[in-house]
Length: 168
Image 1 (cartoon, rainbow, N blue to C red):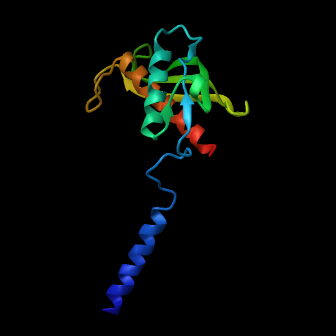
Image 2 (cartoon, helix red, strand yellow):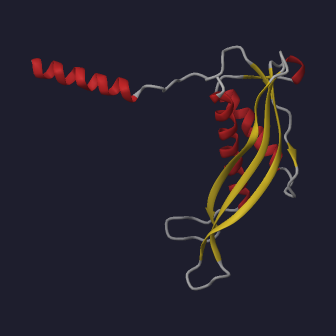
Image 3 (cartoon, helix red, strand yellow):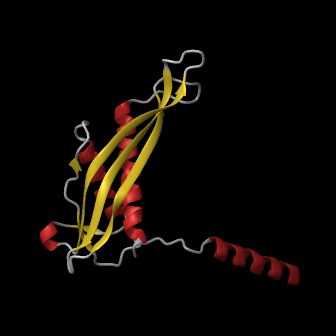
């Protein structure tokens, strides 16, 4: 019986250590209201800023943060999409001019400002990416660039909101 109790205590301790740092609520203080106007877009790819802005808002809402207009907000997240880069990751074997896989990288200059005191909490460039095949490769299925844009927008939004939450 003593061995079972010791084993249970050890397992409980390991579980508690493994769960350290895990939270099920927003890292932002409750009641915070954030404004997220449409990002500007200095790339030559239209509508990407709409997708990224939409994904940022979805991520904040998932975190439990209220999204509102700048007039009613405590904080303002503004920015500009500054990078849309497509890099070849894999070429078709023996044929140098035939790419098989790309990495789409979206980058944005972001500013997160406390509107209550005017202080800039974060200012910097954040990126998100998505790797995709343009040809079927066994278990890896071909994907369109539009799909890659959506996935990269989701990754960029996640990275932006995670970076904002780090400040708290």
